[in-house]
Image 1 (cartoon, rainbow, N blue to C red):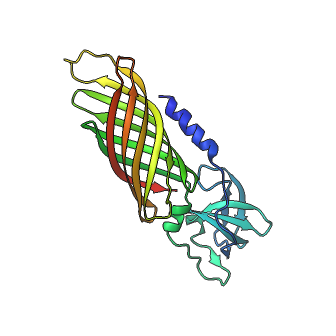
Image 2: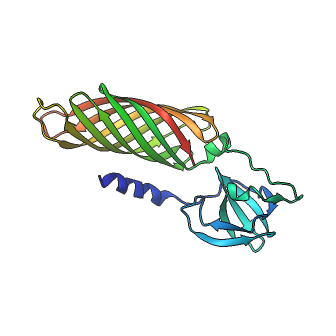
Image 3: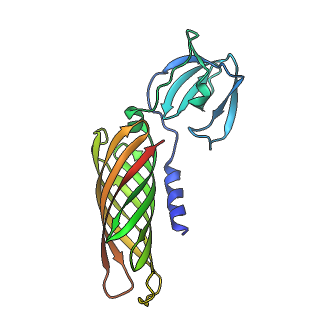
Amino acid sequence: MRRPIIFLTIIMLFHRITAMGGEPLLGAEVATPFLEMHTGPGRGYPVFNVIEQGEPLTLVKRRTDWILVETLGGKRGWVSRDALADARDAEGLPLYIADADRADYLASRWEMGVMGGDLEGARLLTFYVGYRLSPNLSAEVSLSQALGNFSTSRMANFDLVAQPFPTWRLSPFFALGGGWVETQPRATLVQEEDRLDTAAHVGIGARMYLSRRFFLRAEYRDYKVFTSRTENEELSEWKAGFAFFF
């Protein structure tokens, strides 16, 4: 299934390190032998600079468990919250960085989750990854599998998700997207070949922040499957699950 990989690549092209707040938070001093600075907020980003023990730095921005810091020489890079566990503030006291909270949730860009539900009577499991393009618009890629009595279905979908009230704790959203549905018969009495069809869908749902980096998500989708047969198919799906942001 190469199409989901293509979709994910499209989303990652949108991803930039964007500013998320104004003035520097506070000053600190490195207490460990060295501190690695990454080009982005994640261990997958390359290390481009090392801060030595005793060197002062400024904490500028935060993105969940990653902090954007600036050295005395003006270099900026991202360090993990755990790496700053032994750092000292300007008064020589242990540096305290609180756990991720709702403000981080509202400012986050990436999210990932797993949901379970029902697709026309079949048990459904969905995994998705989303990237927030703006406070009100996100792009998502999802992979699903539905296990029915007579067939197994696999779906790959790309969505644009509109969230009109992103600051509400229980926030509704609307989805519009398309993708592919692959159906494989399971019962030997049903003499049908495997088939791959395109599909489009609309959806409605809601997200609710829980605590730390987790939130609850539930949604309903209505699919239109464009088959090679005389008539197209309509499918209804509901699902709910947990997700986390980063």
